[in-house]
Length: 332
Image 1 (tube, rainbow, N blue to C red):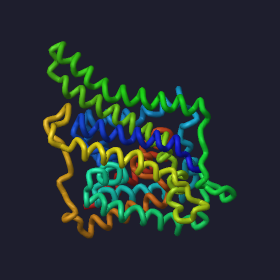
Image 2: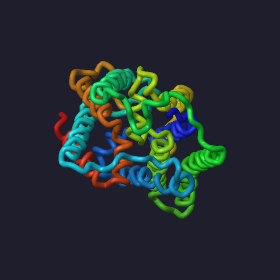
Image 3: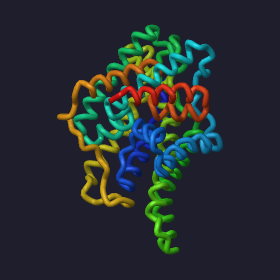
Image 4: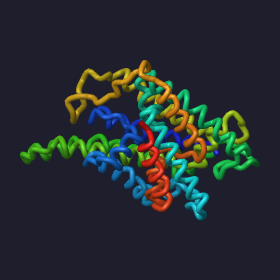
């Protein structure tokens, strides 16, 4: 069902995660690229980011257990296991060939007015919708039955709403202030690695906010994503994730257009932005974006949500992430 309150607040946390990482460390939050580095040449910053994502489950369990993502059961047959691996391969291959997924291209790329990212989104989004419609013709998911129109809104209780708002504000403030404070303390103590420590903290809090944003917005839920991909059949369509555009991508766009990239990031001497443009789009890029769209449309899972699910279901994670690594190796 349509969850405007939770998804809007979750999307704002996604915006904050990408904003903090960009303007404090100078980095683009692209989870598929982060995962490639995690499995090939992990750094302290990469490990810090994924530690933050993994840690996102803990505060939800303590303060907002009703917002923890419900996942399908882990594969119980050889066929189901092979399908999980195959989907991971497809996503790994596609994201490597097209240099990004929903986080790097949609959440961060569209807001930078990147023609290359716009092209990727214009390919993988309709491909995902088409794939979902072909593979799941009934369009019935765990998030949306056929009895009640899925576009009808449901709202959290007053208690949950107030706790969620206070929780989000607290996380945003902590994520923005803590690295600055720690750097000042370390500098005062004469530590030479103050900036490096601050950068690692930024990565951790960006991962924490991103993981929380995925859980709270329910982008981490495969059935929720698939119900969004049920468009244009309105009876089965959950419009919640459209709010990620409104409260995630749009704030990023406004901030980037207002601040620009003239002033260096807080903990870096430069921005590390993609240098390729729409002129660099070739057939490999197009095939990759389409392959990712197919993988996303098959099960409603992309790299960020996949990592969160792997934390909860390690067996599933071993299968899917193993496929992702194979898919990365297959790309060139």
